[in-house]
Length: 311
Ligand code: UDP
Ligand code: MG
Image (cartoon, rainbow, N blue to C red; front, side, top):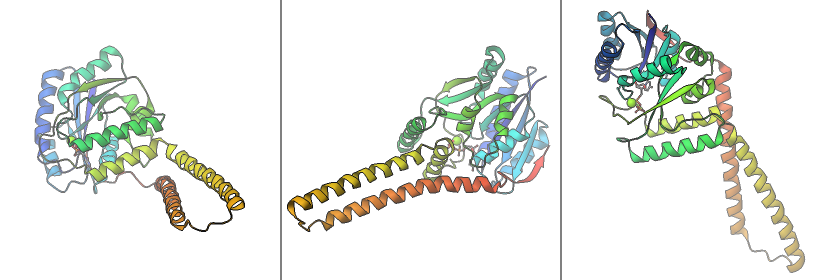
């Protein structure tokens, strides 16, 4: 029989994990019994609560459960990569531990691959109900901006929840970059992808690990990882200001020749200096962003470090 690997990244999910396992098992028994085998790969991303103990308990009673445990918190991207690398199934699905990615959709996703010939099936939520409006607003803006800037398409509302064939998984694993932005990586590798839409579900227990600041940094990650447009933008800004300065000089010389030098004008001078140095610092910041990413890539540090692994 073929096998589906369910990869679940967990960071402080002691409350949600038992509920997740229960629901996932229910769906498996109902929709997949005697059709495909399952394995569960829980990646403990350096949790500070009892998450690892709960995973071990699940492992005791269910031999389908395997786990990887990190030496510290490396972030969800690293956890997903570790899970994909540990997976052995013919199909792999990535899920959150908080049941925001409903296991009940798996059957439809599986059918799309088996019967409709897709290589991978992604999910996107069409509503953002239950999310702070300000967060939704910035999320929308982010997708607008990044899709203008990058040649890789990022689908608004796309989740990391997806089911993939082995060859798609292998393609993702072969991308060894340190600054990982999965939504971009999935688009980058291509393959035929079907999108399934669903209404946002709120997490069953525990709380979100993504503060506004963390999301903001993640958004910058996405832009710098998949677009070099900001670099071009800062060059264009520089060029525009050179032109403005050039014409100003001509204007001032002409005016001095015609009217003589009237002297006043230092407040406006201060404004101009402050404005232009602002632009300069901004552009240097953009270049710095890319430089720092390059710096981290060049170091070739491991993306995660495993403390414990159970086969
Ligand atoms: N997660 C993780 N490492 C982290 C942060 C989150 O593995 O550093 C996991 C978390 O346990 C959950 C998933 O990523 O299974 C999504 O996190 P969360 O539900 O907090 O994010 P949200 O759904 O609010 O965007
Ligand atoms: Mg969640």
